[in-house]
Length: 316
Image (cartoon, rainbow, N blue to C red; front, side):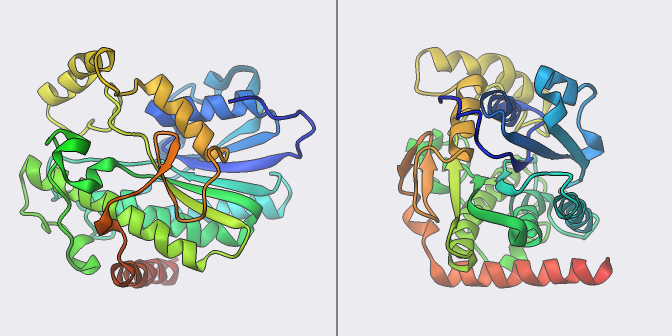
């Protein structure tokens, strides 16, 4: 990825999931290669200690907004804070939104303050809320990027059988605990793969709603060993994910976090070029699963997410 010309007008990128893993690599890559970019990171508790300082000489162009993406009202409030900064010209025009945050639990029993299943709340609903609350401030030429996963294919080729296939049901059921059987790792992983299928459905539906000049894409980084995605897993699973599985990158096409983060940065910055609604697989435009293309599902999901978002707005 080549640095853009220094004469590029200043612009703002809002990003989730930038405090660790491939998101942190992508965030640092973007602000160091595009000196016109001002980065706004949504992170619970304002991010880890020293997070902004980690950007070095570019730290002056990084702002952190406290947000718990499992709290729908809190996510909407964070978006309102960003809108105010844009309206006050404390930030340059908004040209990018990168929804990279994601979570995988060991069951489907984790409940948010809204009574929702946490995987769905973070991996699907939070993305919808942020796009809905910030979309009106996106400038012409903006790209929205949602990080998804090839686990949505549900086959051995894409995830080596490590994650069960998604199991679709009504969005109202998916958003509540226990949709996949309860307190078992299989239920948690199914909730994860299904949430990533839902995120692709969401991209397709938003592509129908966004105005011309604003594109939305889904981005699949593939399985990246050594990240903290499985931080809610058991201690042995976390240990293997961090120390054993990364060795597979030496003998397989798996990316390490540094390479995967750089690919994510490119996707956020508009490389490769892609039509709105496209699925980008590790740096190239590709096809998502046949199941991920279902206009009726996508409308149903949209309607349910809009209902949840509306309930949140009434509570604020």
